[in-house]
Image (cartoon, rainbow, N blue to C red; front, side, top):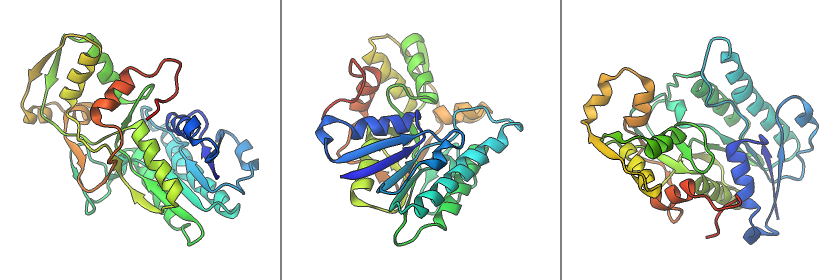
Length: 288
């Protein structure tokens, strides 16, 4: 039996991962515990006996200001490193750190193995700083895994997806620009992390769905699932550059991983939208 500790109780990804591994079909295969990383109480938790620590605690989806900038480094960098140090000291074999595509600092473009990392936000900078420090802790007996996922979506998620979903359900008209974006459905991430735990892998991974997503098509498809009539207004790709707002580029610009870790055999784009918009009654995950 694999023993897994998720550090970051109540987080979207942490609770999703816990629910995935606690499905009846995996009975007896995993023991999953979570710990709240707020305050100092977590330091008294005994990490010994756990095979893997999955560190998902962090700050995201908040408006960055000069006043709260220090929190990003305090939580996303310092807390991550402190947790890893404790895990290593207590004999944990594998430490999985949830980083982000934001470490590249790009709003548009194609990311591959040669793309430099120049994060612009405190979120991205703090995640990259944590990665660099964690890398120094890696050893033959302490395997470090870094995940840099793109936008994650699924039932109850935060970020840009809920905004697109609401637009698909309410607006009569929506711009259609032929863009491409790397995205990752939450249960695809869970399956990906499950494999990393099962095989004891180490290293850097950039998981994404097997299909790139066009924002306009996603909105149109969500509207179809919800049986809402919406008209798509075709617009040229260059029109994105005329609006000097970061959120516009994040939604309508093209940003993809070219050389990344696709999730073959997992949930397709079409399946993932249905599972996101029409989650199973009573909560939890679907069987497959």
